[in-house]
Length: 495
Image 1: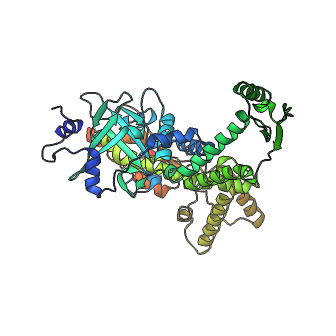
Image 2: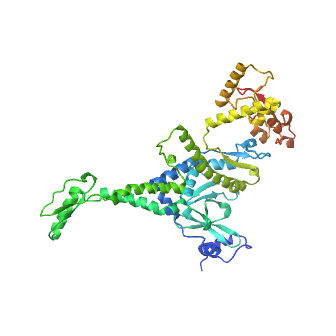
Image 3: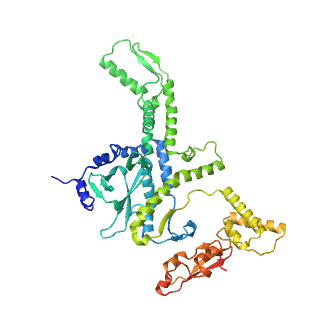
């Protein structure tokens, strides 16, 4: 008797956990009492994107916004603060994420998998490796309808089965697949799609569009009914039908005057109120689709009654409520599933995305003013200037110690604030790392070269006394640390 595919998969699992093979559907029903593993039509959910314009606009907007965000790889800081992390610019995991496979860059990969997620509640990444190589070499987004989890009573999940386009079923191990899913309250193995909650609305929208199309393309009535008082022979009936279609069928012939022979009577037919409600019906369907995805009209390009302030607020809302949650799900998959596959070389590393929320100039100006007022209050209370700016989050500014006259102080304040608002935070007085790059320079020092610190206190945490990076590993090879921190002026030059 031929062995089943699940038999072959169970043979690849350690014998201590292998059980009598049971088909996936039966095993899922056993675990859930019949609630798990419900029948899903993921293919139909994906096809819905091309059949309803509102759904297409939503998925296209969310997937594009998610794909356009840039990513970086960092080495975690001992302090646990994001601002103290060190960016890693060279690593196999970073190379893989920037170019998941030879046919698509990261942007296309993220957009494709995000379309799957938004339509079906699931996104699947298949990990490809070369024989004898343990680290991932390629990532591929695959259709959710082609993936089947293999449940297990003891280990919960034993593996996956991928069904290829030609019907071949390929068993996959746990470390060959990464699944992103929106939790499904009825099925812990599969995701939950917003499309499922609006299937009747999507069907209604499609049927309404088809009805409207059929009315213009296929209707042979200019707005009424022909009544013939006598029975027509087949030849007469066919002739009348053909002549009527020739003269009135189609958009170009709509509402032409009808000429009727042989005592036929014309009965006028007006469009009923029910027919007129099709337009309102399609509008209600659009609202239902937007509601399921939590998308506002503004996010889809409806800019009625909008000004600059509300437009900026809408962009911030979309980034915070739509893009960031999607990025966080991808970030969790990268840091907790993909990075560990690179072994010790990925220890202490983490992926993070650039914040997609647009800056708010008014809020930034208010924050800067509040910090400046707090610094002035602390100085009046007698605190030392050297620690005040760091305490309130402002960059180092030269302090002469001599009080300026009121007009001079006001002019200096205006110039300082103007420079900061123009983006001179980076060019204000700060401390910068300068490394001597040669064969004896270790990798941590080389990666930290050029990093800036807001003040000396922060710089000296990493470089006690101004030199000797605390993460330097050169001493292990008998070399002295090759970098130090120096103060730089407003234009960036070291002092």
